[in-house]
Length: 367
Image (cartoon, rainbow, N blue to C red):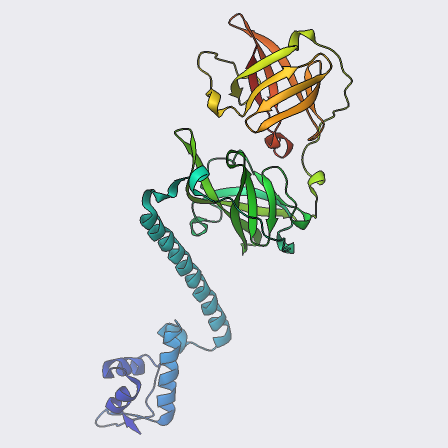
């Protein structure tokens, strides 16, 4: 038998704690001297005491330990609570790492991409069946650890990649030049190549989410910079296997040629408008000349036209009121308007934003 002081030394608890446990019925001494009140504990009491200590270390309260008739359900609930705590601590760790990383980098994040960042070299394709299909954009966050399910942090959808496709065999489309397991390559026209993005998927509240970490590209002083990274968050909407030809908008392009002498000749780009209904202000263009991707367009009497861009030129077809691109299957409407007694050509710009997002912008040209 053990006196209370001896038991205290065996288990590393104070005498006061052992007395309290006795008072609440958690650890009852095997014998109590009727006259002196001394408590005597058996080897079985010693083992029970060690079990109580172990359960406290696993997070059980004294009340839960005392009322342990349904220990299995209690343990399962405690396991769930513990996993939630671990998840919260993991997110805290990620946020602290991101904070420290930002402090260490300081202004070094503002690195001129065209001069300092190497273009991505594509790796051999490795399949990842779980990501194939369509993904819908739901949020944009600074880091994965900053995502809060049900709490949207961004204001609206991005101009590009409001939806994302992982095509069969790692195929690319539009600004997505391809992908392989864990990696996705985005085409950046200003760089003449691709930048590398990484992805991971997580199951959150019954939804499959994809976190795509990309370089955060910004324009400052008319130059392209990388200001750290940002994370696009997507929710999976289907798992359909597709090829590039299966997605996007395809216009009717089989129009016969009808001449329009009013449009003949060369037109120089003067502005870029979000919609064709927006009024042109020739004195205050929305974009300066150096930021205009399309530089000019020439309409020939034979039904061909040449569009000159920063990256080269393309020969297209045209008919009255429409410019036709047989390669990407777009039919862009045009019209000539008189603004301040001068003629301007308003031509729809149907890029990948249109083919894969339905958004039409407008280039404005002057003779």
